[in-house]
Length: 133
Length: 122
Image (cartoon, rainbow over all chains, first blue to last red; front, side, top):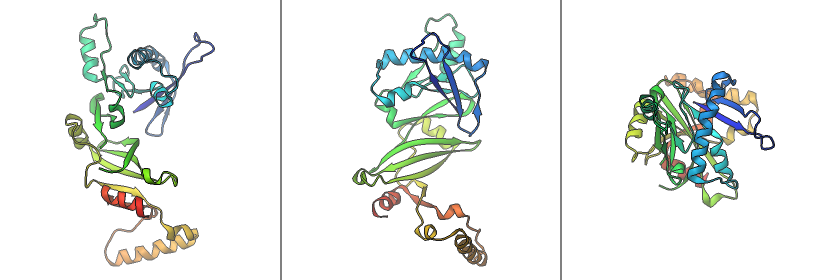
C-alpha cells in the first residue's frame, strides 16, 4: 500500500502541489508522470471531504487525515482517503457508465466509526474495512 | 474488553497480514506505559472479517506477540548476552528443541487478557 502526502503552498495557490509517495514495504517510490495525474482525483476526494465534514483547521488529526491518501496497487486510478474509501466495485461501475456526472462513487465511513475500523488492502485491488476490537 | 488500543500500521505479504497495535492503560497515564504487540492473521481470516463486521481483529483469548523488557539482558554486556544465549541453546539442543534467537528474549507470546495483566503489574 502506498501513502500520499501533499504539501500545497499556502502563499502561492497556483504553484504545483508537491506529492510524496511512501510505500509500506520500506521502498520509496518517486513521483512520476502517472503520479502527477493523480492530483485531480486527490483534489476531488479532498473537496468531498470538506463538503461532508467542513474545513476543520484546528483538529490536527483530521488535518492529517485530509492530507493522507491511499493508492490502489493494481488500479492506479483508484485513490482513497481514510474516511473516503473508493471501492473497486464502484470504480468498475464508473467505467460502465462514463457519462454519469458523479463519476467517482465512493463509500464513506461515519465519523465515529473511523476510530473503530481500519482500512486494509485485499486481493485484486479491493479494500476492506475491518473492525479493530 | 478493557484497555485502549491504538492501531499503528500493518504489513502484508502473499499469505499473511501482521497488524501492529499499542495498548494504553489510562490508569498509568503519568508513567506513559505503552505496550506494543503484533497480531498475525491469514488472508482468509481477513476476508471473512471484511464480510462479517461483527468480528474484530482483537477478540477475547486472542493470541499475540508482545514486546517485553528483559531486565537480565539489560544489565549484561554484549559478550555476556552471547554466552547467556549459547548456554540456553545448549540446553535446547539436548532437549531437541529449536535454538533461540536474540529477538525471542524481547518478545513473548501470550493472550490479550494476559497482556492486560502484564501491563498493570510488570
